[in-house]
Amino acid sequence: MNIQEYISSGIVESCVLGLAGEAERVEFEQMCALHTEVRAARDAFELSIEQQALAGAVAPPVPLRETILQQLAAETVPETIRSAPVVQMRPIRRSAVPVTMRYVAAAAVILLAGSALLNIYYFNKYRDYNQRYDQLLALQTQLAKNNNAMQTRMSNYEQTIRGLTNPYMARVTMEGKDVPDNGSPDPGSVATVLWDTRTKDVYLMVNNLPMPETGKQYQLWAIVDNQPVDAGMLDMSHGHMMVKMKNIPRAQLFAITLEQQGGSVSPKGPMYVMGKV
Amino acid sequence: MGITLTYTEQELVSLLRNRDNKAYAYLYDNYASALYSIVLQIVNDAELANDVLQEVFVNIWRRMEQYDMSKGRLFTWMMNIARNAAIDTLRSKGYQNSRKNQSIQENVDTIRVTDVLQPGVDTIGLRKVLEKLKAEQRVLIELAYFKGYTHEEIAELEKLPLGTVKTRIRNALVQLREYLK
Image (cartoon, rainbow over all chains, first blue to last red; front, side):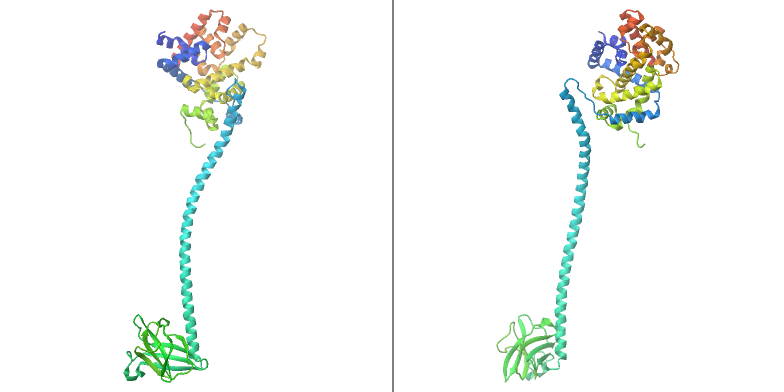
């Protein structure tokens, strides 16, 4: 059959408006699938019917909208397949679950994303706080060290003051100029021995001594019956504080010589200061 | 209110198949009036039309899977649902009861006198275009489209050969198409 004749036979309108018989309708669907012209004619008529219907539309009563939409919202998903009852049940279950699951899945995704963001946020915060904690810890250690040093110095000063104010403390001033034959390498040197007359403990306080070169150390000697007795090594890091030396029961003179690091059994180096008891 | 959504027909169909409430609201807002006028042209009773429109939307909702885009536009499919629902209602108990003693012939006479000439409804939709047809064509379209009679039933009613009925209806439809352009 000629396609144009077929199109203009009224079959298009008959089928679109639902007036055609079953056989005609099936044939028309086949023709639509086979011939674009038939399809185009169908589309055109459908569109004009739709436009005509929209143009001639009559608004239904306003409250009807809510009634209908509410009824649709309350509808359960239909049974789409009629033949097998077992199959009928499936679409209901399959569709019923996804509706809830879709919300659950959406919620889960949102929660996951939120959680990931929070993780990043809190990790950064954690790192920041960790760094600050380390800094504080270092600062605290430093402060504790300083505090210890200060306390040591403080107790040294206290000891020095106690020694100086102790009425039983004998005071022997040793001077560079008292060294025989002007033998002191530094005649301006001064050091003081404080000697507890009861306990016989000897304390040394440096007033003025040149810093020894490395590998050298000052050594205090007590001269007992013209024999030098080791009274202890001097650590210059104590500054001008009173430092406890050895216990010397008896002595006529005190002197300081510069010796090898660690001291000597008998004085070998030059004598810097000397003082009579 | 918010944003006015527009969908392509494909998007809309897919959302309707998913039973998306918003899509049905959109469908209602855009097509309820057009469908209502189709229903009204057939049942010719506002209260009855309200019930039919409700049924139409429920049917669209339930049968969405059956809609096949390759076989025609969504509106065409909905329009046929509306027409069928309206005709079914018309044929249901209320209509039948009030006219149960009338023969089909008398029934057709009643249509001619009351329905076709009823003011108001005549001025909307297809009926308005129908006015332009010849009386003999108009009656056939009235019976076939608005009353839902088969060609065989019409042939019997109008005492015409089946072939003549078919030809006249086809010719009337071709003219209708021209008027719609």
